Image (cartoon, rainbow, N blue to C red; front, side, top):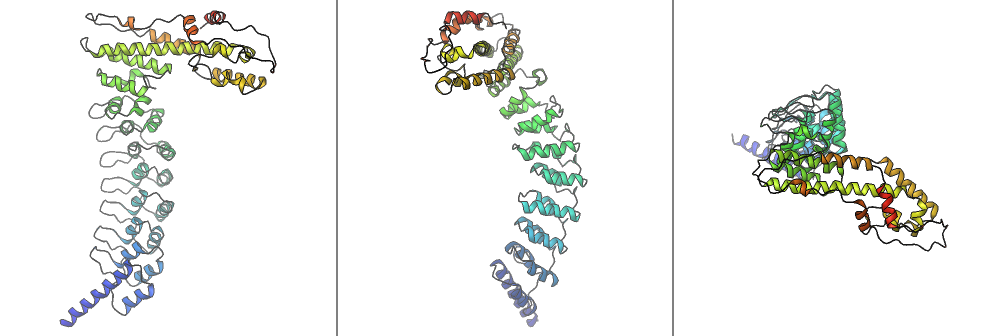
Length: 493
């Protein structure tokens, strides 16, 4: 009995010596062979963390095929689990030792084994990002790894590939039979998982196409009633939301709490999402009467923006909120102030396009000879500076080409004077019923269209006749402000 106890103690000491040497990376195959064959070390012995010698080798040696081969031949179990339920294969993946992980697979390690979270090696690998990991994923698939296996949350490899934006792997496992509409224990599909990520880059754009082309259901709801579109709104994933809308996603969908996409965006203060919504049909958004929605929309849209479509959509939002507020609500006065702001924005935009179109119609020689002074506004913000000061930088021929480029750019853009006039006309069709007890009219706050001659006169600097003796001259009359404004008044809109 004593001898047996002494033998056990002796073996335990040898085992500890083996573990200590492996962890210190100070042992060779021959030294391990010495401890196993001559001193009786147990190749399946476990330390206080439940690790075997094989676990420790894959953690501490990145070129240890010869040692692993020897231990397995001596009976080491390649599927033994430590206290974290990890096999040597899973441990190798955890520490990024992909070369050894592949070697263990070749040596018969179980690649469908699951850890405490129910992850198989394939699912475990998907959460990693290195090129070596991608290679090992593909190697597992070639070996026949189950592409529809589920972890403890019933999440599949495709769920994880979508969440981590691994489009190459997603495409491959779909081709091997992965269910593109599989649901986890929250009824989330891979498309839901992609929508949950706020980061949306080129890689995620690719995987979105992979999922949609594989017939992913665009409007599928999870357990909380969220469609992928609603999840994208929640996570501020504006790019994916655009993609879903382009595929026909239902913008009027609501979750189990009755929250619309607008509710979710405002609740989470996701201005990127609100900005996307403003490009959609306002009537479909079902804007509530709560003015917090209005102000969130105006903030996201940019109240100071001079982009006419935005100003026009702002006025529509104001109208909706105004009509839904009770007559006694003080916020109606705030909305009336917004009317003035947005109407003024459209007026200024219309003025700008009038001047710009007139400017582009002027003979290049006239502008060139006078250094653009006829249209050099005090603020200097309505006429391109490169044209105003072009004479100081380029010759006549270059200037002429420059102006032609500006004309072409103006014609190709949607910033046309007709569009500006149309937007302003549309804005005037938006009417507001003022409560009887109000002592003022909203129309008193809406500025009338200013006489354009007065506006232009206040903006134009005094004409300046340049010394053009060194340049090819074209005889023109000195620009006259009155004449210019008279011509401007004749512009047909």
